[in-house]
Image (cartoon, rainbow, N blue to C red; front, side):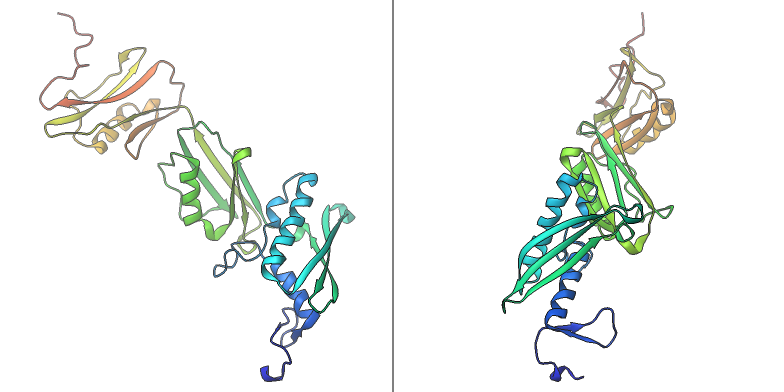
Amino acid sequence: MQVSDIPTKNWQLDLNNAGKILTGYDDIQQCIAVILRTRKGEDPLRPDFGSDIWKWLDKPISASIPNMKREIIQALQSYEPRITIQKIVHEMDITEDKSNIIFGITYKTAEDYTGTFQYSLKQDTRPLALSASYLTNAFLYFIDMSLQGMPVSPASPQNGFLSINEMMKWVHQFWGNLGNWYLLLQENKVIVYINTQLGASGKLAITSVTGELHAPFPERYDLMNYNVVLKKEGKRISPWPSEGFETENEALNFVSQQYKDYGKWILKDNYLVLIASEPLDGCTLEINLLTKGAFSSDFNEDFEI
C-alpha cells in the first residue's frame, strides 16, 4: 500500500504487526496505548509527552486510584484530542497472588462513536522505583545510586550539596536520562522511576550530614593568612601552625592530616567542613585572619609568664 492510497490523514504503523497500517478506531486505540504507557521524560524530544500514572504506584490505594484516573484524563485530553472521556472504572486483579489495577476507559469521538480501552498496570511492567529519605535540617547532603550492582555515571560531587534543591538540580541535569525524578517535600523523600531498559535492580541513598562543624573563610587581604582554630571544651587542639595558611587548600591539607581522627574534612563553597566520625560535643571551629609574621591571638592562650 502506498501512502497516497490511505484514505485519511490519521494513520500509523501497527506497533505489533510490521507493515500493517492502522486507521480509524484501531489508530485511536494504539494512540491511547502509547500515551498511557509512556512515562513523562522518556521521550527526549517531547519530555512532557505521556503520563505520570507511575508515580502513584507506591501510594495507598485510597489515594492512588483517583490520582491515576486524573493522570489518565489529563494525558488523553492533552495528546488525543479526537476523543472525549466519558468515564473511567477500575477493578483489582488479584490472580496469581498479584495485585494489579485494571482501568476501563470509555470515550466518544467527534463522529459520536463510543469506544472502550482497557489499561492494566501489571507488576511485570512496573518500572523500577528507587527512593531515599532525607533530613530537613542537615547542613550537607550526599547522594549515591547504583543500577545492576554498578555505580551510575557520572558520580555525584564528593563535596555534596548544601540543600536538597541544589542536589535535585544536579540530579536532573546529570542523572535525568536514567529515569523520572520526584522530590516529595511533604514526605522528605526523593523517588526515581528508572527507565525500563536500564535494569531491574538498584539502590538509591541520601546521606544527611548533621554531625558536623563548619566555618566560613573570611575575605583575606595581602599580608594576612587564614587561622583555623579547632577547640574542645574551650581549649585549642594542637598542633597548629603559628603562621597560618595562605590558601584554603593549604588549610584543608593540614586539618585533613593533623585532625583526621575527628572525621572527614572537606571544602564546600566558602566553608571548611568537618564531618564527624565521633561526637563533637564541646568542639568549636572558627577561621579568622592572622597577620603574616605575627603570633596568632590563640598562640599563647595557655602560656604563662
